[in-house]
Amino acid sequence: MRVFVYEYMTATGVGREPGSPDHGMYREGRTMRDAVAEDFARVPGVTVEILDRFEGDDHEHEIRRVAARCEWALVIAPETAGRLDRDCWAVRQSASALLGSAITAVALTTDKLALAEHWHAHGVRTPATTDRAPTLCEALPVVWKLRDGAGSADTFLIRDRFELATALAARAPEHAMILQEFVPGRAASVAFLCGPHGYVPLQPTFQTLSADGRLKYEGGEVPIPGDIAARAVKLGRAAVECVPELLGYVGVDLVLGDAPDGSRDYAIEVNPRLTTSYIGLRELADFNVAEMMLRVARGEEVDAPRWKPGRMRFGPDGSVLSL
Image (cartoon, rainbow, N blue to C red; front, side, top):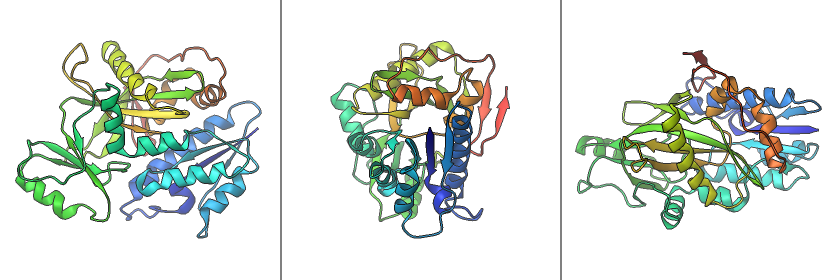
């Protein structure tokens, strides 16, 4: 069996240079690609193909060409400007099966305003969200971010009029933004392996975000305490179960508040693709996460994930530290 692992940043070279503003996303993309490709290669009978630095304009044609000779294709790409959707569409034009979600699921989850409205309709707790621009009349603090952003790009925590002025001056005017209620708590995430017969939760992780008002992702820690982890899985499951046709690795970002009953926990967004948490989870897993992802996507029965003892801190550059 051949598995095609496609990662947009490394395939196109966007952000490759250290001085590029996209270099952080390039580094994260390369880290995820290399890790999951290595894990697929350890599955008996599986050969892995990647697309590394394609020199040309029509990389979607190149995706179709490589995917055509593979049974499965995993796409890792930023959601911004429909990039993830277009790259998944390219795979769908080939004979390869996409190890990823349906078009409707990708469209819903990558539109953060539509997802917030969908969650409200289905009783999933999420911050109040609107598409209007922030003003001095806001009940601060608020978060202003891209409607389809990835990697905390153009994300602003606005706590006073000075930060409001900075955000208004710094944001990219050509992109749609959303304004979101700021909810206090610990940033966390929980990933699910999604298939036609259900969802397998992986270990929830704490997220480390920058303290500069931009909420940049700086890595995470796994595992988190059992009672808090149970709350994360419960809310994360509610967040994905109301979205039809999710498939493969899906990450849910959360904020876990200080109420033991979970009444101050909030779902923030869904990433319908591999996320950087994979780096830490694979180190703690007593199984091959990529292999289980593939089996769940095929609709096979799998045992409950088994985890090694210990605690890991991981970074977006692929670094892993035992704690």
